[in-house]
Length: 104
Image 1 (cartoon, helix red, strand yellow):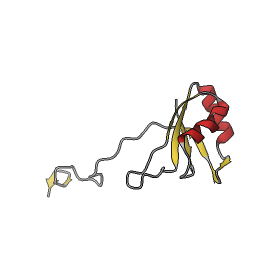
Image 2 (cartoon, rainbow, N blue to C red):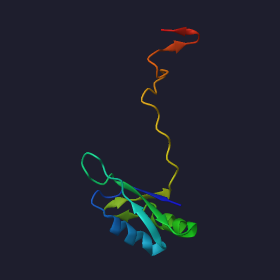
Image 3 (tube, rainbow, N blue to C red):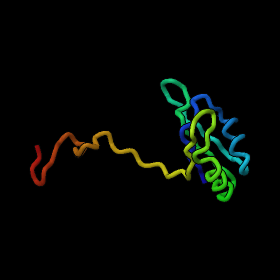
């Protein structure tokens, strides 16, 4: 079970997020991804709570709420999508292009 929290302040801490969500139940994990180059929080995160009913209560209460000067986007996290291959524009990855039976 995981909640997506978007539009977070870049200055927020895991402890602050945990405190806000703990009003709705037991927070088991807070994850705030960090930009590799700048080391700054990326503006979104994930919160895991101990039950689905606690998650739903937090989503209903916090989605659209203003916190730290920002309107939060809070919803059920979706499974991570697989990344497309670097050659996603249609090549076959082998350096050849094919159209039907022709290769060039």
